[in-house]
Image (tube, rainbow, N blue to C red; front, side, top):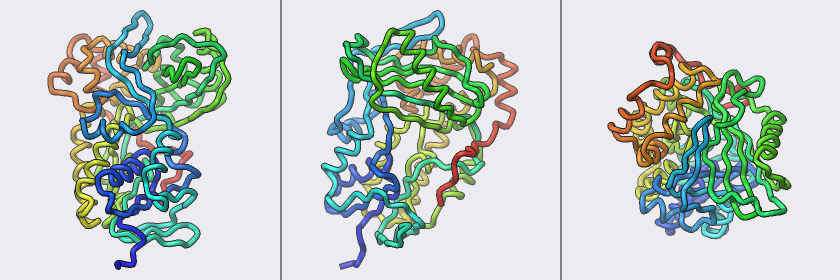
Length: 404
């Protein structure tokens, strides 16, 4: 007997922490786990989406057991003067379905909600109420927190789940509808706006108003009004049955070593968005979270210090691989007039489908990168060069405090 509470304690029951717990339950059921979440429910109030091609066969297998929305007949994008249907298969998972599977498949005592963490170290997690959970390995998945070491802009959004009295008639997702007013709500500075539409059922729609904004201001009243206007424009009437809001970083550069050092706790594994394991331009996290969860399950017997070093090395490699996307984000925020930023995406969605899917998966080939940058640029060349050479603003969100 070791006297420990569990083998592995995971702090943060969001996407990354939940998938790590699930991967361990599936591949290493002999290991005891505690999944510790400060909020009232695992997964919070979110919706995660991805392309089927984003995942490896093992990743697809891990995600197979979730109840999720699936579209195998393609999706649409819309821009001023240009529309396109693409063939890629698309998936979307709601947090309540995420939580339901974890509750089914994890051990009865594995999930702790409403458990705010006061401090953690390599062998224990101390809760705000004084309770101590001891573990061989501690994994910190508490989410992205600003330090001032990274630079960029923000993705600000509000999503609404509507239920219509009559069938709405929308068969496929609209991943990006930028044929909308590009004026940002006050307080956001410049922004690129698009609307995201998911037909979750014959009578159910998820409609999200999204901005690539210079500032992290989330004006709920303004965004709610914009969704009302969009629904009226497309002839949709329904009762709201749920909503979500969010502010995500769009990372364009910075000192990743300093960012990691600011969050590092000796011997503690740092994973998820807190570790920088995100797509810096699209903010898509699920494919990366799946890959890291499987990687941790594969080496779950490593001592905490060694597992922490492994995942930190993966985060450094990921940062290096994502340089191309940070460059594009720099040009988006620094070189394009806010009202004209949609032109960058409109041009991008004229490219080959395989290139587009690899872009979202963060696996663009060298030839993909050349193709994205070749031809007539969607932003003035001088401004693009100036943006690349200039220092982007630090990612500092005044509405958030860095978790300790």
